[in-house]
Structures are given as structure tokens and as C-alpha cells.
Image 1 (cartoon, helix red, strand yellow):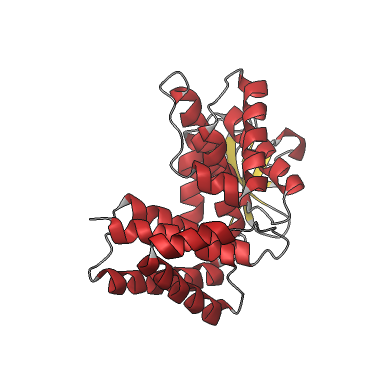
Image 2 (cartoon, helix red, strand yellow):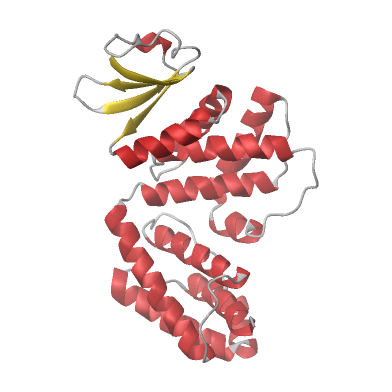
Length: 277
């Protein structure tokens, strides 16, 4: 590994054998690093591959402000996630998780509130939520700080987002366009533009992003919601009909079946959007 330049006391930019650039992290490796010198792999605790100047700038900015212990801990958590989950977790998850943990530990003595997506994550992503809870134990073991249960949800969302990113940019663009179409359908039903800055809209968009991930995981078990759906049809007929339109649009775009369970969840979110001022 040939050193390109020092990025910090614990961070060095290197060129690998294939000519690619990688960010190397290790305790004190930046002190003796000089352009053109060889970096001993044994001194490196974590690697980050970079494919563009913009990505290098982003990684460098975040890494420079984070303790090395947090980056090592985040690496352990993502490795654990890859062992526990079927879906691949993108390596890009390490830095955001480290940043989140660093801030969460600083906030730990403060008031503890339930995460707004607690219910959705527990119900729809039990495996990722399990990884989040395991991560809390790893954090406590490493730092002595016991984070609140709401942080298990936040960490699970980081993992879910990273599995979506691992599917590629093309998929992300297609999903973004489809979400815009679905919001247009809800706006047409409501007779007004859905407010993009509303909490209900944010939760709906998050739900849709994770719904597309679930649709590509046929192994994910679903639960019977016949009773719930029957009640929703009676109590929220307009939201239910809109949810059916959304399900049809999703099925026509991605050629995957939207289950009765998913229609029920869509109905709940649409009802919130229709009721939002």
C-alpha cells in the first residue's frame, strides 16, 4: 500500500495494488505517513474504498471528526449485521453509524423518548430491529454506556438504508420516481398538494422505501391482517381505495405482488396524509 497523503493522525489516503484509492484508519498511522511511503497493513484497523473525489471529501470530513473507537465499533456492528441478515449491508453504512453512535452517546444522559417509527420497524423489520438491539449491547460492552431502546430503531434504520444502497443507484432512482408518482396519487385524492415537510409525509415516504425492499425479499413472513383490514375498510373507505390504487401502481411498475398486509399499512399511512392539514 503506497501512501498518497496523510488525512489525520489516525487516517491516511493510500493507493492499493489495483491502483484504487482507499482510506486507511489505524491508531497513530498518520504520524509517520509520508507521500510515497509504504503503509503496513497490520497497522490498519479499518479500510474505506473511495471511487470519486466527492466521496473522498465526504468520508474525510466525517472521519476526521470522529473518534477511531466509534469507527471500529461501527465496523463491528455492520459485520454483525452481515452475519445476521440475508440482505447485504453496504460498507457505506460504517461512517453514518459511527457518527450516529458518537452523538447518541453524548446525548445518553438526557431525556429518553420513543422513536417515531418504533412500531413500524418492530413490526416490519424484526430482523434489523434485532440487529439494532444487539448493537446496543455491543455499545455498552465497548463504552459502558447503555443507550435507550429507541436507538435500536435508529440503528436498524441505518442498516435498512444501507441494504437499499447496496442494491445500486439505478434501483434508487427508479424507487424515487415511483414514490413521487405515489405521492401525486395521494395529492389527487386529497384535492391538494401533500406537504413534503409534514411528519405524516416523511413517515409515508420512509414506509414506501422500506416496502420496496421487503417486496424483493420473498422470504419475509407476513401476518394475517384480515380483521384489521376489514375495520379499515369500514372506518377509512377513501384511504383504503387510495391504498388499492397505490398497490396497483406499485405492482404494475415492479411486477411484484403487494400483500394484503401491505395494503393495510398503506391505508393507515394514507389516512394520516388525508387527515393532515
